[in-house]
Every structure is written in C-alpha cells, then in structure tokens.
Image (tube, rainbow, N blue to C red; front, top):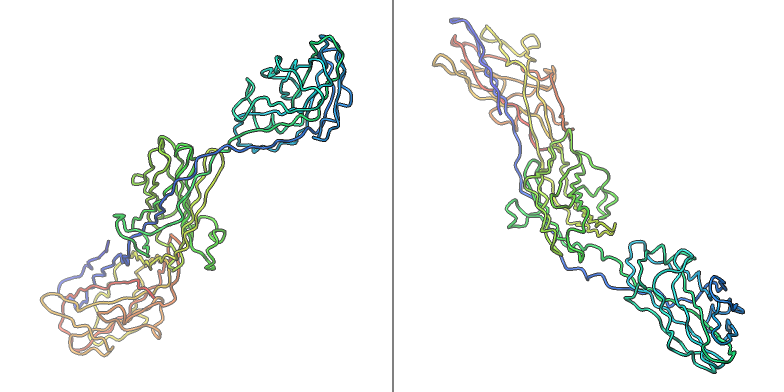
Length: 506
C-alpha cells in the first residue's frame, strides 16, 4: 500500500510543504490453468518367453541307479538323444536341463511354467517317474510325472507338463527364471519284464508372465482461467491458476507414486524438456504430488520465492479408480520472466517405476509484472525564497525506492498542484514557473543536467529507463533526487502536495 508523510512547519513561515505519496503498482493480467484429459490404458496382459531349449544337459545321480548316456544331446530337437537302458522296475538318474537363458523383466509377475519333453522308448513299458522343476539348483514344487502313461515305442513324441497358469506348487521371481540354475529334471522307470532303452530328444520350457502396465497421460494440455471454465493463453505473476492432469492406470490411481508438473521457459523454442533446466524463481517452477490416501503437494523452489503451490486448492482423484484428474493450483512468482514461450512438462511415475510423459509446447505468455516500494523520509524544503532556482544545494535525496519486475521497466515520477492555507501552488511543467507556480525535476541520481521535468503524467518524467528483470529481492535505489524551482511573486503559506513514484512496463 502507499505511504505518505506530513511535513511539520511553523505558522507564518514562507514554506512549501510536500506530502510524498508512494504506492505499490502492479499490472494485472489473465488467469492460467493447464489441462490434460486422460485416456484409459490397456490393462496389463500376459506375455510369454519361450519355448526355449536347454543350454546344458547333465546326469544327476541323486535318484535311481541308471545313468543317462549323452545327456548333452537334449539341447535341440534334432534326433540326437540322451538314452538310458532300463530293466524291470529300474529307476533312472535325473536327466537335468538347465541354462535356458531367460531374460524376464524385473517387474514381471510369473504366472505359469510349461515344459515340453520329446521322449520315446525302444519298447517295454517306460513311464515318467519324476518331472520337477529346478530352482536355484534344487528340485522344487510339484512332481508332474505322468506315471500312468507309457512312453511311445519306436520313436519320440512330445509330452506337455504344467501350463501358462501353473506355478508347480511354488512361487517364482524373475531372477529365479533368469538364473542358469533354473530348469527341469526328468527320471524314468520301466514297469515291464524287458530291458528297453529310454530316449529323450529335448526338454523345452515356456514361461508366462505379466508386466504391469504403465500410467498414461492424455496428450493434451490447455490453459484455463481460475474457474476452470474458459481457456486462455496467458499467465500473470501472483494470480492463481490450475494445471489439470488426467492420468489413467490399469492398476488404479493408488499404483501411482508421483505426478510432477514442470512449468518453464523453453529457451530455444524447440519444445525439448531438457532445455527447462533446474527450478529457479525466474524460469522454472516444479510441482509434485506424492500420491496416497492423503496426498502431499510441494513446489520447487520452495523458499525465498513468491512462487506458491496452493496446497489447499490442489486435488487428487479417487485412488481406487483406474483414471482421474489431478488439479495443481499455483501462483507464478513476481519475477517469473516476461516471455511468450512458457511450456508445461508432465511426468507420471508408478510404484513399478514405469512412467509416462507429456510435453505441452503451446508457448504460453507470461505477462509483464512490476512492483514498487518506497521508504525513507518525505522531502521537506523548509523555508524557501520566491524565485528559487533548481540547484544541487536545494536537492532532496531522502527517498529510497525498490523495484521488482519480471522484465524491462522504467522508473518514473509525477506530481500535481500543491495546496495550503486555502491557497494553490500551480505546477508549471515547462520549468519556467510564474506567479504562485513551481516546477520539480527528478532523476535517479544527483544529476541536474539529466534530470527531467515532472508533469501530472508519469510517462513525461522517466528517471531511469534501464531497469530489467530483477531478483525476488528487487533493485533498490537510494539516490533518487528531486530539484525544486519556485516562481515570483509567491503568496506566503504552507503548501503540501503528492509526489508519486511509478514502475512502468518498457
């Protein structure tokens, strides 16, 4: 708000009394919001890896008495077999296949494992004795052996064990599957009174798994007014706006970790988010919603700034829904740079570290903003003689002015007629005051040669035309100088008036 001072004087003295009215001036602008409208992501769907062949085939004597010959032959479907000659009621060692070479994603959920074994016999009645999976080098889970089924004689046929939703009675992680020690073990037995040969050509595995779906931001962003009912293209510092971000996640909103909105200048106009740089008061503000039953909202920079995320007006959608709208409410800082290429960049991250991003390169305008604050003592020329001319000796330097602006600005000053004791001292704007007239010059420093004549219009008396983008603390000038000239004759009296300092868009 404006400040003013009254100058004390003694009655009957020939004195001009000045009241210096100093004001806060700012240029209002329009209201901003940015919106994105969501689409539904496809729900997570099952993927498969395989069937893959064995990398390494080995004989394991931890069961049975009959050794497999050439166990390394099970690495391909090629009629090169691992074999074992089984007498009646003999049980073979384990024929193990490992090193499948899976590369399941680290965020995958394993849904099922399917094994296909190409096996046959030369005759007799050879059957499965054990079919189990290997986890970490040890047999684990269910025995899927088809103990009632005779292996085909005279050739090799394929048998299937497990399936896309069968976990074999245990749990699996991606690292279990990707390990070289993951695989399958087979043991066979002969229930006939002969000595046939069991043959195995290959042991393939297919793994079914699900990878969580990533969140989705609808590719659209629009500026709205504060009522969120009309689009605009401009922002103004210290006005409240809203950024609307619609996000969909097949795993529900509760699966989201953060929604981050970056509002910044695109310095080279190429719509590249990497140009936005780090948060700072002049070119970039970053807002974050940490999603939860009670969301938290934060802004960066968060201290020594007039940027503000208005947390009480920010909202998060229902977290049990699969899509919803996040509203970010904020006020641009006083020194958010006046420019015509402010863009919005949104990043959504879920609990599985999956992300979606959207860059809104609509080149929004940040309008000019200026603010002025005046301190010090109002000038008091005391008792002066009629006909006093401009001079350094009667100059007054008691006024300190601080300017805050987000762009180029002029410092200016103006005054009007002064009054006192029922009389009027008339402002002469030509610098040649006559009867009961006065003139005032002003400059940003003690420089009578450069000083400009005051009028009633601030546009006529610019005392500094070099102002530009300031910091949040502003530019402070304590050298402002006023020079007074009075005409003659001059009716004696105590006169007071208003001198107003301005900040103007340049």
